[in-house]
Each structure stands twice: as structure tokens, then as C-alpha cells.
Length: 379
Image 1: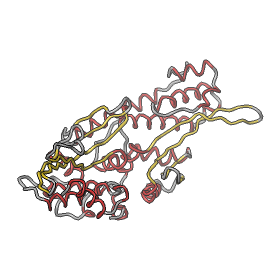
Image 2 (image 1 turned 90 degrees about the horizontal axis):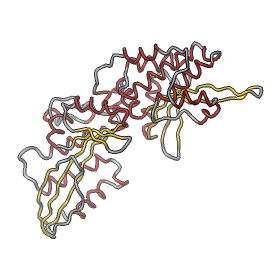
Image 3 (image 1 turned 90 degrees about the vertical axis):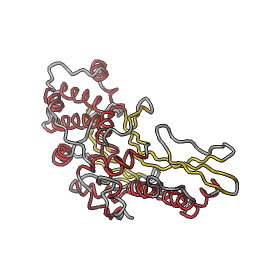
């Protein structure tokens, strides 16, 4: 199935979810020299970065924004970068769009800071009042904790640098409009389209296999927080216990952990939110029953797995990029309903379907993939 079949499903909420994952609002301190005199100014950029195989999706998003901005292909890392840099485009398109289709958590705060900077710059008082420019520099330096203001900060005076480093506003500058916009912002309800965009950028669902031979050797282990379906198969080399497990995940940096808690609530509090590094957290569901009863039905906008099986892929509400992962995990789980009996044919069908979950599978063909796993486990 090609992405074109899902084009009709591109929505503002989906774009917001994708930007939550793979977009950024950044402000950098830049400089230029005119008549031997150095001038400092702020350079603003809105960016979405994606794998270049999804170029058509990025172009469709650009079309949704009225054709503004530019896109660039990076052949080295195989990405496409879509950027908007025009102040009028920020005011007329980007800011109104994200006020309607809202970001969340730390990304929302970055956007609201970005919005304030654009609006102050639009009236140009920072051109003649150095305190206002310094105020904007202070805000920009703290709007995205994982971003960087740039090395031009060295051109500020030592006193000015202290304001930036300590996140202190210059005396006499009123930024109450910014604080009020944050305090009075009314967050919209979390939607499935937003989650689809977020999942396409920062999410994953996978199937994994664990084999244990009669000798006791184990080829792989289940990830922490997951359970697995287990079967026992006889073969020429003895008995093999083969387990099939699943893992649904969405990752966010530590500044967006509240979003992961929102997502957990959206999925009826199934799964958990875990810390995986100093800067990163993950929402994870590994229970087969939770996947079948809540996660997958909600991800395709159905009430139960029973209502999913009679639909073709293009008839279901699926993420735009990782639709294959959701759809084929559903198909795998259909192979093993409650009370079913394992056999070699069922396991081979699960292995075959797992190929379409990963999609790449190290550039192997379906036949090569199935043959390799069968040989590995002596099925």
C-alpha cells in the first residue's frame, strides 16, 4: 500500500502531532557588519525533518501551509528538511495554524515563546531599543532547553551575557503578555490524529520472537515490560519453545513527559511511562491483552479487535507513515485468538506477517526473511 492511499487523511491535528515529534521552533542570535559596525539580530526558523522517502508527505504539508517555505534534500543522511523563515509567514500562517492545532507540553511552551518573539519583532521596537532586543535574546535562549542560541552570544557585553545565562530580564522591560499567554492558554483535547502524527515521528510497534530449545539455550530475551505468547513445537532437532511478544512505544524528551502521561490516560491508563536516559522518557505497552483490548482498537478508531478484522488496510483509520506496523500487528494477533491451539502453520503465518511489520528487514525479500527465521528455529 502506497502513502497516496492515505493522503485524504492528512489533517491539521496530524501535522501538529508530527511537528511535536519531528518539528522545531528555533531562534538563533546572528550578526552582520555594515560600514565596519557589527549588528546583532535574531534569526527565526520553523523546521520539520523527515526521512526523504516521505518527501510527498512533506510536500503535502507545505501545500497545507499555502506553499510557504522551502524544502531541502540531504543526500548524506537521506532526510528532507522543510523550513519557514519569513516573518510574515510566521504571522499569517504558522502561528494561526498552531494556535488552532495545538502542540503540547514542552513543545507548546517553545511555540508560545516563539510566537511572542515574532510578534514583538513585527513592531520593530527592538531595532532602536537595545533592552528589548536583549529581552528577546534572553527569552530565545530559554525557549528550547535542548536547542542552542548560537555562538554569537560572545558579541554581547559581559553584563548582557549575564542576563542571558541567568535568564534574567533587563530592568524596565515588560513581558507580561508572554506570561499571560502561557497562563491563560486553554489546551485542547488530545485527539487520535495528533497521536497518529506523534506515533509516526516518535513511536513504534514491534513484534519479536524468543526461542528456547530443549537444551536450554535462548536465542533472545523479551524486552522488559512485555509479555509473550508461547508455543512448543517438535522438530528434527528436538523440542523448541517459541514465544511471540509485542511492544508499543512512544518516546519524548524529558521536557515533554507530561505528554506521555496524557497519552497513557488516553489509552485508559494501560502501560507505563519510564525513564530511559537523563534526557529521554518512554511510554510503553507490552501486554498482549492491553494491545488487543485498548491500544490497537483506539489506534484504528474501532471499539474492539473484532471490528478490525473485516476491514482492508485502506478502509481503516491508520497513521500515514507507519500504517503497515499497526495493520500487520492486528493481523498477527488475529492469528492467535483466545483458546487457539498452536501449530507450525500458524507460527509460519505469524513469521510471514512480521516481515510486513518491520518492512525493511535488512533489505531481505519475504522469502529470504521467512527462510532465515525457520532455519534459525528449526521449524
